Image (cartoon, rainbow over all chains, first blue to last red; front, side, top):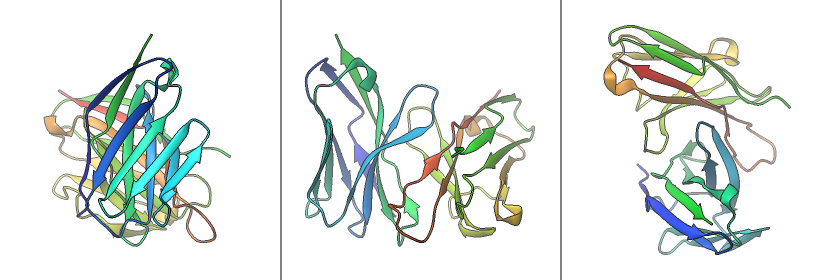
Amino acid sequence: GEDVEQSLFLSVREGDSSVINCTYTDSSSTYLYWYKQEPGAGLQLLTYIFSNMDMKQDQRLTVLLNKKDKHLSLRIADTQTGDSAIYFCAPLTGGGNKLTFGTGTQLKVEL
Amino acid sequence: EAGVAQSPRYKIIEKRQSVAFWCNPISGHATLYWYQQILGQGPKLLIQFQNNGVVDDSQLPKDRFSAERLKGVDSTLKIQPAKLEDSAVYLCASKKTGGTNTGELFFGEGSRLTVL
């Protein structure tokens, strides 16, 4: 099955850029999602990229996809304290039916 | 549009007791998922329904976990008997199928289970 890995922790200063990385194993992934989870809350979709794209920009968010290396990254520009949360990478496989989550990266934004 | 509703939000039980969680997906969403999220880990898929049929339950511990989705709308997830390692947040999600959609899953806030 799909294996998704992320680094566990990232700390940045307010106003800096954050880059969260993800590697996955299933090359048949169609959509690749980034979800955000705040303490005690459910998962909220942040952004996604279709597998035939290399890059997608959405306001402060930039997603980069390297299909050859099976590497996905999420860049948050001008990181704010409200961005502190856990970020999950989740490729969609299984013919578009199965969503597999990474371990999550906890982003801490310091003043 | 109302989101995915789950209840109860919190439940504390002793080991070997039973518990049930309920989920009401977004209206019109044919696909429903139950995920288990243990503290410090990513959500793990337990079971996936398409309407009222099971699509994938390969990671559901069937000796103690059961789930149903009668009439293809609401779903319940039951654990009987519970073990200490079942302490987790149980997340329900739904997805629209057909038409033009990005395959996004919409999640409820989850049901937090503590087994003592």
